Image 1 (cartoon, helix red, strand yellow):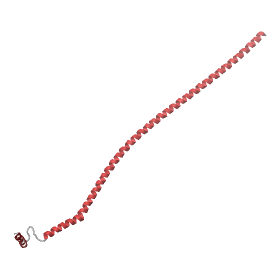
Image 2 (cartoon, helix red, strand yellow; image 1 turned 90 degrees about the vertical axis):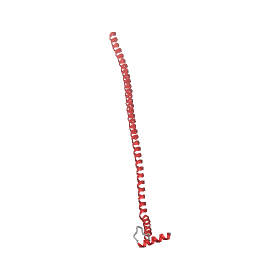
Image 3 (cartoon, helix red, strand yellow; image 1 turned 120 degrees about the horizontal axis):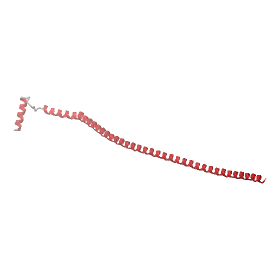
Image 4 (cartoon, helix red, strand yellow; image 1 turned 120 degrees about the vertical axis):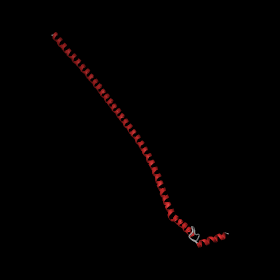
Length: 161
């Protein structure tokens, strides 16, 4: 029975030809050509193109990740530098304030020392003046005593004479 169907199909193909499907040698040849063309296109065009697209995608992705990492690191460094700058400014202001305070202390100390020295010199001069005054008074007293004796001696000489 299978042989008879096969024979009928072969007779129909030889007689009419041009049916919807012709089961002759061209159909398998076309199928082989299609598969061969697909394999060749895949090997020559699609694989290298796919590989290039994948490499480009990986390159872009890695550059993007790298750029995001660098951006995050740059932001972190910027924040760190800003904090360090603010801390440095605070320290500098503190040092300036301390220096000004120290300078005021030194100036006040110098003024106090100068006033003490001036006071000491004034007291020394006052003591010297007091000593000179006492010496002058003692000398005057001596001169007054001498003059008083001379006057007394002259008066006594004149009364006795």
